[in-house]
Length: 478
Image (cartoon, rainbow, N blue to C red; front, top):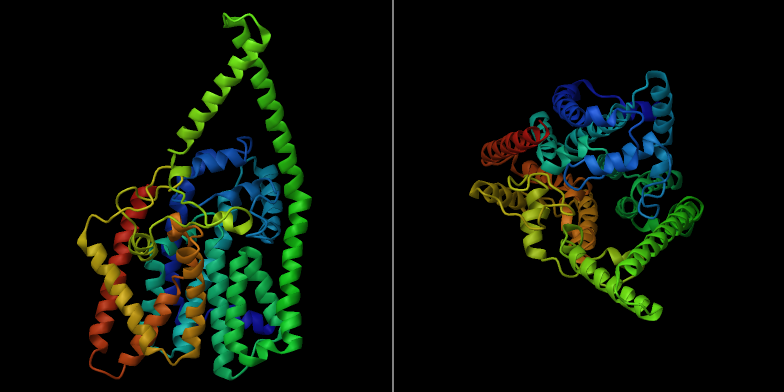
């Protein structure tokens, strides 16, 4: 417990930079809350539909608002197996406060853990630069601030989705792994298990990254029978078994009930339509009436099918590589090069002025281009700095560990196409790797003449991203 308290104790030299970022996030949280305050604070306004229909910030889902307001496992249990249970205490707090005040304070309740996660993400980034890469105070603060100047880190930190929590867990795991490497230590079984359940419980793919980080930290010891059995195989089986139990216990009964209710409603509607058709048609023979009605229903079903395929939620989703299981979420047809330029390294870092923070499944095209050449110049500079940082840190096991998680994200998003039509909203899962890599470039330039020029370029780039993204984001919220 003492070590845990020490881990989260903010050092004196960390407060200034972290407090500035915290102040920025407080303002943004205030604007997000104000945008939906009148509707979301009503205790009798409904839950799921009210939040889903009225929360419109990019492709982020306000599922957490719904789960906290009225608890039930509404997250996808196979992708977020423990998340519903992690927010259960918040749900109890919200129920108590709603009964006490008559107002649904869910926005304020959800904002607190998001603020804490964002704040400590910044703190652990500072420590990565200071304690592991060994940069000076200014460079550490600059690169940590750069992370929060990225568009979808800034946005993820203030919307009621799981991405900010994932970012905090991943960054803290990277930091802990780096400190283990420095000390020549390894992750113990219980430490790996705790980190795995925390990261995978929020998002299952994060658990794979935890094992990647453990592999780099522990080396060959990762494959020792005792460690591999109790730290890898057993926790993986347990969390998958729990997800299966969660699905059968909470989700499947609801799905069956919903399907039965829809089937009953459709049958009643079809019967009413048939009676109306029978009363208005000139046909007399019952068989002919039934045949004509069935033909009309097939025509309408075909028309609806064609209409649905022109709507954004269908039109902007590529064809999967295969049907069934996890493969139904893949995408084989969305263009990869344009996605990498405009979304992966584009929208993730700099918001597009056109279709600003609109949802791909509602109104935003998958590919949107910038109006200004300066946006592409900033993107190119950032990618070049990133690549140069990888080169400078190519002998660092710590950097390759961080990059392994990024490579995994590239494989599932650009390779398999998972979530590729809105890949930028997943940016908080991997964007922190870019400043870390650039940190090795800064370290390499510390003893050279280019240090001042590099520091100036990073300062200008960070200032540009902060000013540009804040202007657009605040303008959208206000």
